[in-house]
Image (cartoon, rainbow, N blue to C red; front, side, top):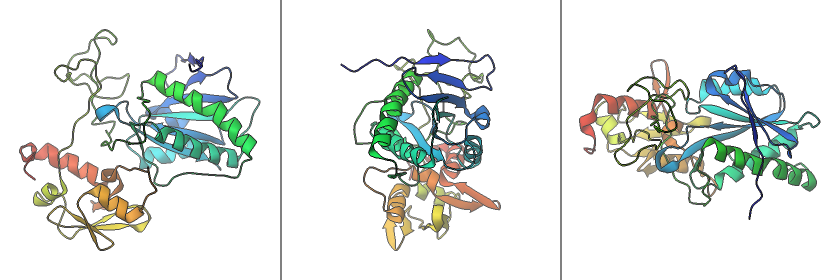
Length: 317
């Protein structure tokens, strides 16, 4: 039988302030901020987890683990507000009042959290690389894992994330905060008029799917590369860009050419471009970008525009 963990939730009156999740037996502090106020995060050295809406399709949820080795947590979060649109809250792990982080301990904890969260079957990692720092002593590593990992598990369970264990991760599409839908459970949440914004979650409302009241739901994407080419949202011969200068050439039949290999999906193209380690996953629709309007857009964004404009195409390509 596993030990229970006592988590005290401190909710300030001011929505701009962090919710603190206190674990009396831990030497670390855990604070939760919604995306709109995440730049108010305190602390210098620390580790954090960006979290997507929970849950998504088939219970899937998304995460990104980061650390602060220099600068402040607020500066790192501010950069993610600019370059990552999918997350809606951040859990920050800070040293307790009588403890400190070093850059090495923050780095080790970043890698330990990444591996820990990746063990959950429905967790989809969005780190481009697998973080790791092996420089702390074995004693320090043991202390960090013992003081943080079980408490993060308890907090995520409290927040509603599916913590079923299993190495076979789902590869779910990432629900944007703008396009994800949340179905209210009548006996838990006050009634709202249809299409009235849900200010408690920053997500639009939707009707329950038949036979599944109270479930969180999201739009299922059906758009394909070939359909996007046929309708002009992508172009035959166009070059997509990935991080680090990686490229993929679009072919009218829906394939992507990477390093001379023909790939039948964006995910396969990502795998050929990056040669990821076993167990690492990535939403390739957010990874590949196309040059548009003087900047770039993810093929996920282009797909959403295509699907909205051509709903009758579903199943045609």
